[in-house]
Amino acid sequence: MVKNNSKKDRCEDCGDECECDDDSCECGHDHSHEEMNMPINPQMNFDADTRAAIQEIQILEHNFEQLMQQKHLFNMEISETDLALKELESSSGDVFKLVGSQVIIKTTKEKIVTDLNHKKELLNLRMKNMDSQEKEFSDRIEELRQQIMKKIGKA
Image (cartoon, rainbow, N blue to C red; front, side, top):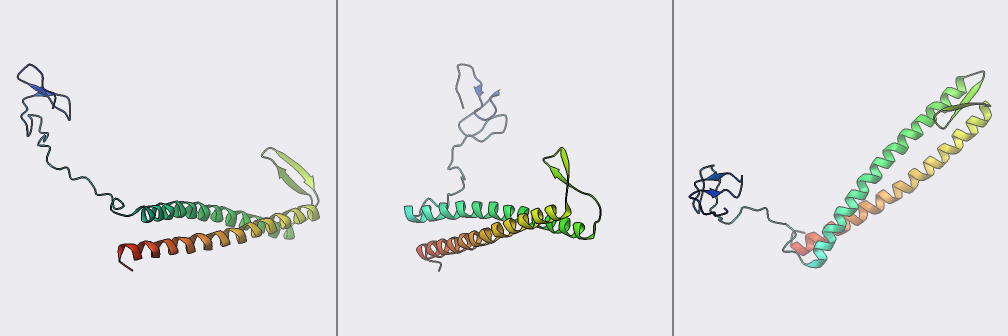
């Protein structure tokens, strides 16, 4: 509350001029300044190593989530590639390939099947790499969780 020379004071919360005393004001705001019910930071009593481990877990979980999203996109792309290959098997006649988002070129069925199979191999290789990363993230997160639980006495 900001005191001024008039009989009214300016409320700290809303800025209105009203009759205020040390505990409350006309506009209904509490100015008793009792201990605030602020949320307690669960990390504030931990040692530096434990706080660092908690922070590392948070970073790993964020990266893990991004990896899962990327895996989902790759799975969708593999499915689309499989569908395109299946359609090519049953098609006859001219085959066209989309280059960029605006150009379509005529190609041979064999060439596009080769290209799609190569693309599928690369996608599967990337998926295998992501599976490995997923396991590394999971293992490290579990290891850190166990360390933290031991330190706080809940393991």
